[in-house]
Structure formats: C-alpha cells, structure tokens
Length: 465
Image 1 (cartoon, rainbow, N blue to C red):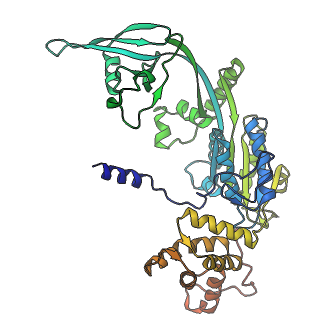
Image 2 (image 1 turned 90 degrees about the vertical axis):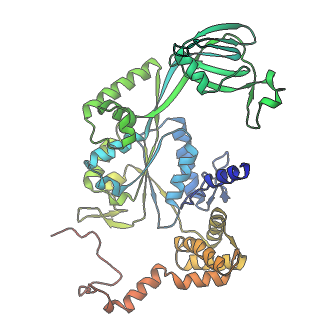
Image 3 (image 1 turned 45 degrees about the vertical axis):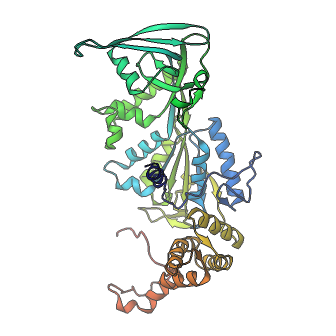
C-alpha cells in the first residue's frame, strides 16, 4: 500500500511545462546589475536592469499611475521579463491581460479595463483578533448515558506561566474532534470565530515515539498569558471588494466569475471607505502591476480612457508590450510608433529589448531542455542554435519536445542531430511556409492577389471605406 501511495503522490506533483515556466526572477544582484544567466533569464541586460529599477520603486510603494512600454521585435523576451517581475513582486498584486480580451468580454471596453485596473490594486486590511494559545493538558468529553443529549466537556490548556480549564460546548467539541486534537498538542483558538488550529506537538511529548509519525511538527509550549491579541493582515484586491458589494450573492460571485458591469456609485463608496480606513490606520493601499500584452490592439477609445485612468490616485503601474514598429492605430487611418497615439506615448517610459545573439540563444535552448527534461547532445544543440538564428527562437524551442519524441521512437534517451534534422523536415518554419505558399498558391482557394500590391506588404487592419 505504501508503494502505491508514494507513486500516487509523485504523479500528483507532475506539472505542465509552459512557455515561461523556467522563469524564476529577473536575475539581478543586490546592486540591480543583471547577471548574464540567472533565474532562467539570459541576455537583455539593459532591459532587465531597467525593469529591476521599476520593480524596486514598486516594492517601496512610492509610485502609482506610471506606464511602461516594453518595445521590441517578436521573440526578444518582453513577456518573459514581465513574468519575471511578477515572480519578484511577492504579495503585490499582479494582473496580466491581452488587449484582445477587452473586446471579447460581454461588457463595455472601459468597464473591462476598469476591472483590470481594480484587480491590480491591493488593500492590506489590518484587524486585531483575540486568540487563546496553549498546550492541551487534558480533554474530558461527557456523553449522556442514552447517547441522545448534547455533549459537554472540559479543556485544560497551559502555557509555561499558567494553566486554565475551559468549559466546552457542542460546537467546540465537534471542532476538536475534527482536528483530532489530543493531549500534548499545541493549539490556537480564535475567540471571534471559534476556529481551532493545530500548531504542532509539544516538545515535552517528543519522547512519545510510538504516538508520532515522520510528518509530526514539534513546537515549544507557549509562554505568557493564554489569551493574547494578535494583528492579522488580509490582502484583497479592490475588484474583489467591488464584486462582494455589488452582487446579491456577495462573495459567491467571485467563484462564478460572472461579475457583470459594476456601477460607478458602488466604486465611489468603496473608495471613500478605503480612504477612511487608511486614515484610521486600519488599511493600507498597495499599488500593484497591470501587464497589458499586444497594446497595439487597443483602439482610440481605450487609449483615451487609459490616459484618464492613469491620473487617478488609485492607479496601478501599467506595463505594456508591443512588437510593432510604425503601425496604424486601430480604427483610424493614422500611423504611429508601436501603434500607440503620440500623446499617450509621451506618458510612457520605454524599455527596448534587443535581438538575442548566438550565445544567448544557445543558453536559452539549454535551459528549455532542462525544463522539459530533455537530454540533448552537444552537436544537436549547436545545430538547433543555428536553426534558431536562421528562423526564430520560438520555432527552435518547439523542436525540442518534438525531437525528443522522435528520439524515443528510435529507442534513444538523447536527442541527436539526426532527430533535429528529422523534425526540421517535418515542421515548416515561417519563411519556408511562405515560400511553399508562393510556389503552390494556384492550388489553394481564394488565391487572388490584387494587382499592384506587393507580396511582402500585406494590408492589415484596413478601415472600411
């Protein structure tokens, strides 16, 4: 049975490998200098250092309402840097959305952006609660002879300084039984809610080897008074408070996900209440981070709303990413850098990402092989690096797992050059796919190309006449 249980536990720990699951942080030292290869991040030293400076200021809680644009070609690590920042932030709220989500929701564009903003602002609510903490000396539970009446009992708790007997009611007896509390356990009881938490086993019972398992945690017997006041800090987002106060089902709407549009009056009342709590010292506002990918997909309405929203005192730090150069602003005939209006671009701090060199690409591919648990020969890694420099890094990363499958097919645990060549011939990259279409376009449907239009200059996002 124990063998079966351990196997089941190992299976439960299996995780899916995502595009950025190897990222652990920005890879900076104490002086905010970027290491060449650290925490899954490779290269982009200037961009990572700039992100580290922004991150430090965010952690100090000194700025809000700032906007940062991460601009660079596709596959230069913009989203990776944003994910690294989210890992470094800790309990500071981090929300990630794609611009296309704004248009696909069953609500107005401005409401969708407002909810994203409110999700990115945390509120640390402080409250003092009375707790009873001590070591259980004895539990006596009295049942009626018939077994029908209510149970009663006594609980003896002690600290190093005192010992007290408490009378137990039906609810407390049920909680103690559920938590499997017995003599020698150190427990904590919340007086307001009656919730019982087992903190561990007292060191005085450490010699009872027959009654303990390998996972038993031993703690010291508490000292001082049995009843103490403890400050508890809850961190919630403003959006969660909005949902709880705007829907009939209250907090259950958080689980259903169907929050719908929230009235501005509700938000104004919540903002006023939060401000009062901050003045009284009961709460603290934590400006978080909102990451908006593919910012060029937003239209003029969204940009004008963002212009106004960033001026609010309860605005998060907004990090945007774009891989466009000079592009048409959605819904207009005007061209602008990165597809972003000039007046909005003036508000942004711009972090530029550069193309990776060959050594960086090799290091990234090596990290991805480790992440996907693929063993690759050195010459195969060199071939894959050459493929990445000639095609794209994303295409080369896709060939790692497919190459591993081909290697397994020939009964090998190590990916070799022959496997990389095999998957390279099976799966086309962008350039070969385009060339194939040009060579065989007559055999495809709807292949008419308007006269005078350059093959390489496809018209995108043409507004209707």
